[in-house]
Each structure stands twice: as structure tokens, then as C-alpha cells.
Length: 252
Image 1: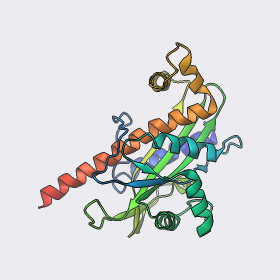
Image 2: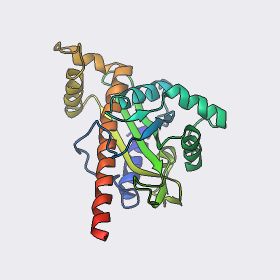
Image 3: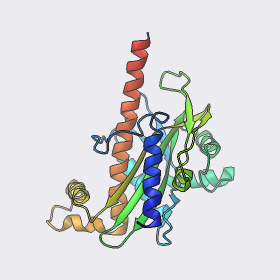
Image 4: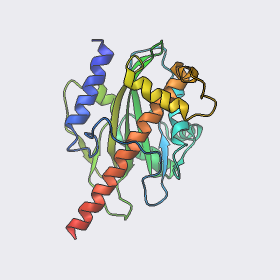
């Protein structure tokens, strides 16, 4: 097993073990993905520049960020801040990456939005069959849709990838990752190819039998991976919101 594989498996294990502290992180792999805004009121999110934890010099983190942003824009009724605006705002407030919860808070406040997605690539091989491991967490403001204060936890994907063992999540007041997704997409596996073919079939101009193979190229594979992770992240967020509403009703 390569060092990057060990880092990816470690990151997945930490998220699973911390599921009791990060609601939604320990859901099954095959959760039904959704591609619509899970919130009852309009929300605006940003995508922070991805971190490169893969050890690969061939990975373009801005390309990853752009493709993730492009796919997130396809989500119905969800507003997403343009990447160039995010980068300009980060430069203005003096940060180059989201490396701790305070950075996430500062970026959200500076943009005047509801949350930010922080992600990292922990494994990357662009050659056929391509392989990528992506970890993302959705940081949102410390209030729910009714304005009630929520308990907060902070987790940084880069720190998780480097951790030697599970660690306690820091408590905070204004920012928390409500859900986290860590997935490995290896195009040498049949289940990944099946999902890739479905993704390609849903895109115009890829109805030819070999059309799906164009998504084995670097940028298109990035977009496919982003699509899969976004769908699961939104499904987990919807489940989190549904569970909170049920808990609120039961507590009345």
C-alpha cells in the first residue's frame, strides 16, 4: 500500500470514528445522492481552494477547485460564489488557504455568505485508469434556518490526512462542519466505471458508445468525482436537517 493510500484510508477511518461528533459523517457509502438545494431558505456557499495532500506534483488544485465549482453550480436553487471572487477575497484578507476554522470564519464573513466547502485531494493518479481520493467538508454558520444556535465542531481535512490517530474535535461557536465526505474513485473498478458511464450518458453529446471514455481524461474525471461527492454531501446535509427538525418536534 502506498503512503497516499494509507493517508486516504486513515482519513476515512477518522471521519467514521468521529461520526458521533460530526453528524452525517458515518452514513453508508451508497446513500442516494441529490442535486438540489436541501435548505428551506436560500443559501449561498463558496468553494475554498482545494488542498493537495496527495504528494503528486501533477495535481492542479485550481483545476480541481474550478471543476468542483462548475458541478456545484448545477445544483438547483443553490447560489455559489465565483472562484475568482473567493480568491480575490482571500487575498484581500491575507489568507492563501483555509488551514483552520478561523480562516473559514473570516472568509465567510468577508464574503457575507452562509458557508464554505473545504476540500483536499489525498490521492491522485491521472493516468489510465485514473484514480482520485477526495475529502470535503461543509462548514456552515453556527445557526440553523430558524436562527437557533447550534453546537459547533471544527475539522480540517488537511489535518485529518496527516493525523496519526483520531483526535478530539475542537469546540467552537461560529463555524462547524455538519457533514463530511471522503471517497476513493478508482477507474479500475467496475462500480466506478458504471457510475462514470451514467454520468457521461446524462451529458449532451456523449451518447456514442465510446463517449463515456472521454471522462477518463484528467479534467473530466475531476468533474465526475466532484459530481459524485457533491451529490452525497448534499444528501447528508438534507438528512442532517431532517433529523434536526424531527428532534425539534419530539422535544416540544
